[in-house]
Amino acid sequence: MSFAQPRYDGTSLALGQQSDEELMLAYAAGDLQAFCQLYEQHKNPLWRFFVRRGMATECAEELVQEVWQRVITSAPGYQPSARFTTWLYQIARNLLADQHRKAHRRFTLVSDESEALESMASQDYPDTITEQGRLALRLKHCLGKLPALQLDVFLLKEEAGLTMEQVATIMGAGLDACKSRWRYAVANLSKCIGMGAPADD
Amino acid sequence: MTEEEKRLSALYQSLDKENSPEHVDARILAMAKQGALVHTVPLDVKQPSRWTAWRWPLSSVVSAALLVGILFFTTSPLLPPEEQAVSASSYDMVPSAPKQARREYQAMPEQKRQLAQSIEREAAAARSKTASVLPAAQISERLAEVDRLVASGELQQAGTLLMSLVEEAPEAKARLSEGQLALLQEALHRRSTNQ
Image 1 (tube, each protein chain N blue to C red):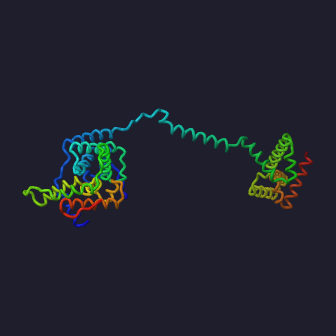
Image 2: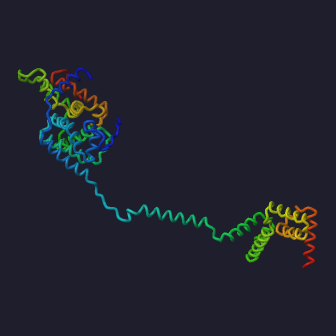
């Protein structure tokens, strides 16, 4: 996978027309506006990447700040050898792994959670919300029950909008393995919210 | 993408979008501002010392001077031009001479060799002296003058002129007519009897 390597010339393009990599180079040259635009584009998807794992708000805040701090401190030596988004989520995922190690948490396998997933499908919700709203609420709960590796693949694809190749790069895993995790995630979520049959990883 | 994936993706995108808290945004943008200030400050720029500033020009000048010096001493003659010419001619003579003569020449002691060189120089000078200094056109002009004097009856004057011409340009002798040769002999005889 290769990317064109942009060079920041300081003036050429309006901020709205610049790629993430060009914005990052502009910020590395001292252009704060470039960072503001970059941050505006990525702040909410990154925030949701943390909170939709069921993480406490304080913890998510801490991790989000840590990610952006690393981006800021790495700016002077930034080389656009890969997409900025891939790099950003690689930092985020590394921090998550550190967090898990510190907390002595283990990634759970889907088989361990099958009962919990099934129980979500049968959960009752108030009659006042629509069917779509009920499914959405179920999905939120089910995401929290999904195994970490499947959840990572699902969030990176759906939230960050990355391709499966980019997801594989971030996960440090093979493309086939990531595709497989994606399929399991979809099957498990569908089953959990009552849309299809469950799958094992 | 399968139907199931599409439906799930659409459902996920319809979820409420939680946004990054404003106080987190403010903190991160403040960090970025500080970072931007740091990025614009040049990193530890030291004033170059005088030696560092002049290092390249100086070393270039010294190198050029050395090169010129080497070229000068390797290409310029050690002897004055006239001596060098003689030395070159004598040097040229050695390899072109017959083997025995060359051996004799090389076997000569230094003094003898210098003497031989000086004799050679004198002979060359004499050769150059005896060599014609008059161009052919001038010889023809003089001979025409001789003929004109003979025609006007001034035989003695014509003989003197002819004699001086032959002394100046010996090769003119080959161009003399029988009458002119007789005139020359008469003039030479006259001079010898006068002396």
